Length: 431
Ligand code: HAM
Image 1 (cartoon, rainbow, N blue to C red):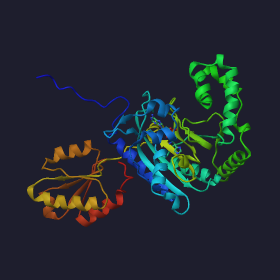
Image 2 (image 1 turned 90 degrees about the vertical axis):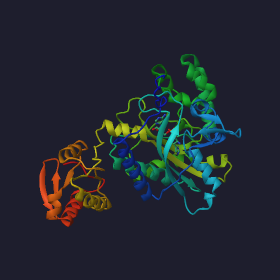
Image 3 (image 1 turned 120 degrees about the vertical axis):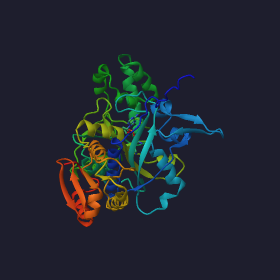
Image 4 (image 1 turned 60 degrees about the horizontal axis):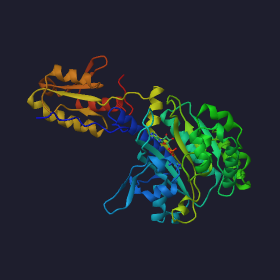
């Protein structure tokens, strides 16, 4: 018989295993907690949508839609795509469910996998995870922009991400941006011969993207180009100045970066990106901005919008590089039982401890004391509880702290009390 060939995960995607998955859960939970305090509620949108949704919102000339989407024909011949991002879906859902009739701003967050067929490298995957938030409604008050960024800083502080940098820009609106883009095109055409092939092509397709270039030889040329900040219309200028004042009010530091244009077409006015240490070239952990008019473009009523998405894979990499990911024991208490009469009390005890939120490992069959204790140690349990015939006779349990092997004999009530006090579920570490 031919040997069965092993099937491996496809290029650019990966598994997230325990104990790493527990850290992801903690980061997710922190986002949920923090975002809720800012009045955000979760939206769950589909993982695939009509291709047209992304084409219209992200833009057909972008890398994302132009070359990175996983697109296929469904049986009924509709072209569908795995979502490369979720802002488009949130706007589609906002329209589909008439959410514009809801009172105040609609504040939504989401978390989950996104799909882009990029060249895989550290911090860049074909299935990656985002935690994102969007604010949709009638107001484009700069206080919304600043509070959204404030929420990000609170979240990053809570998960322990340090050394971040916030880059901020305004890329104007449909009044002033086209004029600036035209000016840029004219100026770029003058220096076309000095630019690489990609930038030369972008002079035609999307001159703003030339500002994104990382090619060293192009940097001095780009530095001489006209800057959007000098070409904003009055309304955009006022809006941007107020966004900055609102950030100052909140004590949030930022760097003005006129070259921050972002790779999606729906943006206008405020754009921002947050970079973090320990990531190499893929160091953007979060990107976002304002997209007034996108809902309209998708067939909805005139609506203002702003949002961000955090790259969770990168966030975890940065936390790991900073040594912020503490191992957490998977087992608080390992119950060792020996003798037929001891299994029933062991089961009862396990149930009581689990009800108190304590992580309990109960051997499914009888093990010798030595084997069971050895396993408890390998699993890095904090405690072992020993239940033998002697313990049953005395009406007491033996509690053993595995770090220093100290043992105490306790009644059931004392034991429950002791463990409830010493193990704080979710925060416990082996002492
Ligand atoms: P984006 O800048 O394309 O924006 O992605 C946001 C973040 O997702 C990036 O900063 C990065 O951390 C992460 N990311 C993107 N591609 C990959 C990848 N291939 N592998 C790992 N991480 C990746 C958006 O997606 C917008 N929807 C953000 C937004 C929401 N703007 C307004 N609302």
